[in-house]
Structures are given as structure tokens and as C-alpha cells.
Image (cartoon, rainbow, N blue to C red; front, side, top):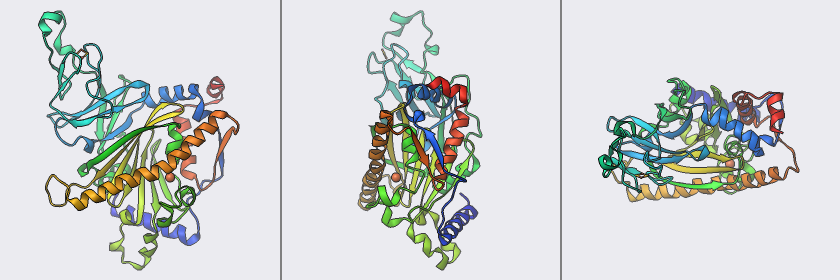
Length: 396
Ligand code: FES
Ligand SMILES: [Fe+2]
């Protein structure tokens, strides 16, 4: 974000604090729990959101160098292989061998290779997805054209440091897929120059929206995070902006922001005075803390299951070498555990919510006026889902 926006956001927080307010919606909203538990509903999400639209799936800095790759699972069991080729372009392939469909690399694996060798019969692909070789190919497959047996490539594009993919082969990822405010926000966070410290992955038994919702409101801070986040934050105070149809930036101010009015403006530093969230649902949520940026990849597996991958991105070694110092490693390791601890406080609650929703005893949920980001998200989500009464009737 530019300096003007940074100053404006700090001023916004100070004004809200002075009034004892937060950012409000016009009125509270209730939603039926169907959207979290119904398999028919999930199938519609699959059609309208997960498959038919560009999905923010990764940060390009997760694969900074030629041959760097990560494998990422997506809905419908699709396994993606994201690779940076020798032309520096990031491509997204199906992680599936063209011989008999074996996975080329393990789910969740990340590393660097010039060649991807299938573990079954050693068909071998280069970092642009071409079939570069196969044992005894001419003897066994002389009637096939090697040039037509490259990896299946999905339409993808890197915008603002974010890798977008569209699983519908008939749809491109448009060049303006990410709004200017989001792009400038990722520049502010130095996204392109960060590097992966570590990642971890696990499955949570909750709908992806429940998990997202825990990340974009501060109402729960003093309760759910009373021993972790609450002492450092301003309670139920946040400010946010929505961009396009589903992206958002949220500022969760910390206590040091209150000292801003006593500092000269050139010392105002939002990064130190707040946690900043960038949400690109359904796939990515970024949590910026002063010393690191976490990617929280949320992969909807079913109505009640979401695969999570936490990736801690950090600055490159301060001494210009390719190894973090002991002090840097210690700090990154501490943060890697801390992020997980805080997320788990949310995820455990998410699982109880899902479980209660599945029981159907309480049939609706409520978003209060100060949960305004959630209200906006669901309004936009309903548009993406093209919901109307006929569609909803078909879900029941
Ligand atoms: S399935 Fe990949 S080489 Fe046979
Ligand atoms: Fe939380």
C-alpha cells in the first residue's frame, strides 16, 4: 500500500478508538446453516467458485528460482504441481503422469528439480511440463506422439506476486484479476522478496467459510484468544475494505498504535502497529505480522472438511548469505509455532461449530453489526453463487 493509505488507515483506527467504535454494517444479518453443511450447496460452490473462476492458489515467492516447485491439493482431488521454469515463468500443471496417471511428486511436497521423474515407470518431464524422456518409449509407444504427452497445464497467471489458476480449461485468468489496492498491499509487504521458512499441513473438520470467518473479525479476540493475542490488541476494533467481488484487507490494530498521535507522522508504521490480513477466498489468507507473513492456504475438500497449509514467509538473511543466522532462525521458529498456536485456537472452535451445525439443532447463525466484514463477504459470495429462491429450494 502507498504511504497515503498507510497514514489514512492509522488515522481511521485512531478515530474509531476515540469514538469507542469499530466499522459497522447497517444491521445484523442471519444465515441458514445450509451453506456450511449441505453437500448440494458445496456442489454449487464447486461449480460457481472453485472450478469456474480464477483461484489464488499460491505466492510466486514460494517458487522463487528455476525448477522450484510445490504441489498443492485442490477440490475434487485435483493435485496441482506449480513449477517455475527455466524462462522464469510460473506454470500450474496437473500433478499426474500422462502414462498411467501416477502422481509425480507427493502431495504437499516442495523442492527444486529440473526434471520430474514419475516414480512408477520413470516417464520424465522438464520444468515446462514437456515429456523429455521415457524408458523404451519407441519400443512400447511408437504410435504415440511424445510432443502431445506433456503434463496437462491449467490456465494460470501471476499477478501482484499471487499465482492464480483457473481449472475451467475454457477460461483464462484475466490480467486484472487482482485489484490495484491488493497489488500495492503485497508490494508494501515485500511479498516477492520473502522466502519460505517452513510449512505445515493438516485437515480441519469444518467448512472453509467458517475458517475464513475466524480470520476477518476481531469480536472474538478477547475471548477465544484471551491468553495469546488479546493482551496486545485493541479488542473489538478493526477496519477493513473489500476489493472486487471477494478480496479484502483488514487491519487489526495493536496497542502501540495508540502512541501514534504522540509520534511525528514519519514514524508511523502500520506494520508494527497492527496485524494486517489480506483475504483472497476461497484459497488464500495472508496474515502479516511485523517479522513475517503467513500464508494460510484453505482447500475446501467437502462441506465439512478443509485442508489447511500454513506457510511462514520471512525476509531473506540480513547478512546477504543464503543461511539465516541463529538469531533469525530462533525468531522464525518461534513465530512458526506461535502462528500455529493462534490458528488452532480458531480451528478447534471451527470444528465444534461444524459439528453443531451438522446436528441441525440450531438452524441459523448471526453476524452482528461489528462483524461487518463477514456480512460483506456473504453478500458478495451470494452473488458469485448466483443464488435465488429457486436455486435455494433445490438445495433442500
Ligand atoms: S504412470 Fe508415470 S511412468 Fe507410468
Ligand atoms: Fe482468531
